[in-house]
Length: 486
Ligand code: BG6
Image: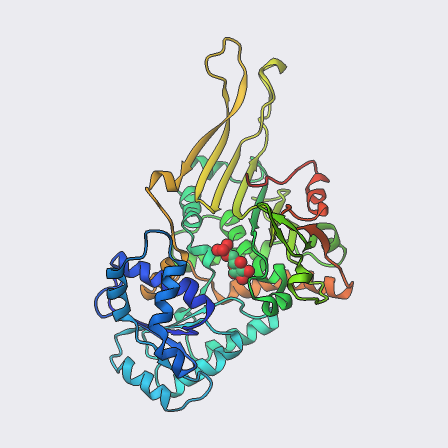
């Protein structure tokens, strides 16, 4: 059980806080993880917003919680923990004294400063926390991506935060790491002899990591058009998943050991520069189409007449230069406005080395491990088996299925809840070290640089499809194909 803590939510009235953080804290309260004495202090810029906050948070919960999660009695209890305050983050005025009064002076009490604000104000925010003496030995800061725009800007942001908080007290969130199946992936890999022995270039043909979304810009045109899919999704979520799939077994599951192994993977990624970028990376941008029978506009229309070469889709063939992974391609793919919303990792095994059945038994399809992170969370192993009840031997694929939402009645994980509680418990295993951020940018930057130098234009793809045809061609060149979610 956690000790009582204070969570100060800078950007408390923003989209992230209302959509994700407040619902996550409400769930934590409902399951009894926020003990008596915990307080949540959403920070709003304007006094009127702070005065209205309880109404705003109440509406947000009703809007964003899943069916059956909201109840008036839980809201009554949870709302008692909310202490909204008005504060100008950039100006160290008397409003900060008010925050200091609320926080009090107990050095043992855990304080979490969650910066759900643009990185440009991380610096002033930390500086004012420091000027006002609010950073105690038990203070932690939680930061969200985007941590910069490239290696240099990310380093500047990290240095700024580091001048106020030691690395151990900095919790960099990648919400994908809080997803239950992602943690299950580690359990699967490191607690089953089956996978201990079948997890390398000798057995595996290739690995696909895909995150497809059906949404478009969701009112974030300004941010997204500056960012693009490579920075928004690959630099963080996809590379983090790649690390967990490819890393060596850590000696223990301590944050230090896990991070050390992840960094080795990032450093072993074969650099993609110059012509290698053209050969191994596909960029796309959606044009109008339809998704689930609904007509949706193209990216440029969503930008309202803008001209842009920002990618909304990217597919990459990557290699990890290590003994374990020599010759095994890793295919990474993500895009907006695709046919289905799905995040999935497919481990494609090699075929058996010798076929003992004759052709009449049918084709042997190589084994496949499919780890689905969303919309539902499941792990599936596709094997070959004999068709039941037939006198002749006919082979057919059969599935070993571990669908978590079936096994655990109405199971739904909440990545943010998990990560916020981990920060409160000082458990940083699922957070990202500064060196990981730097290593990920070091791999991504040259790709962006090459696109810029060559004025690379994204290929069109129709909204509601699986991306530009060049993405399929990337795999077809070696006789492979994408496994698209059904
Ligand atoms: C965010 C990106 O990090 O992840 C968004 O900025 C994206 O563009 C989102 O939509 C996807 O998260 P999830 O959990 O909905 O797959």
